[in-house]
Image 1 (cartoon, one colour):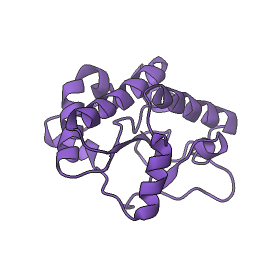
Image 2 (cartoon, rainbow, N blue to C red; image 1 turned 180 degrees about the vertical axis):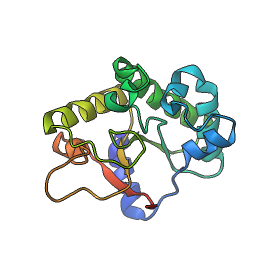
Image 3 (cartoon, rainbow, N blue to C red; image 1 turned 120 degrees about the vertical axis):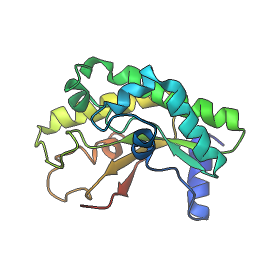
Image 4 (cartoon, rainbow, N blue to C red; image 1 turned 90 degrees about the vertical axis):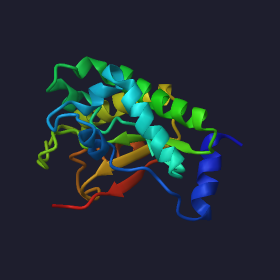
Length: 184
């Protein structure tokens, strides 16, 4: 049985404990509020790995990659739009390595946030651009070996249209879950 099948069985057995608030922990450890958190995967991997290990030590059965904003649209604002695959692959690897070192059975999920900046405005990008951006992020995560993406967003997928690319992973044959976030 492969890892994704074991994950599906575990989900069927009931709720599982997951990590959360990676950004909040990073801010509490001195990372500036306006920093590019996704760049920490490359510039401070030891910090990201330490947080993953802490969640695992606390009993998390699922840890998310630190890739919430690691898509070309958000990274372009930092001049890093060409580093999507590298950051997502490395983000998945860091989470996997933390899991492997812990010796615990846990799963790594790829965190995929909205394409736009965190100002809660929809971008209304063409579907082809949305799908390409999400696909690029998924490809990097897949290279880093994870069980599936978590769509880490504030609002549910819209029934008409798909402005944030929320349906893209599912339509590409990739299992996904919508994780509701509290609204302001």
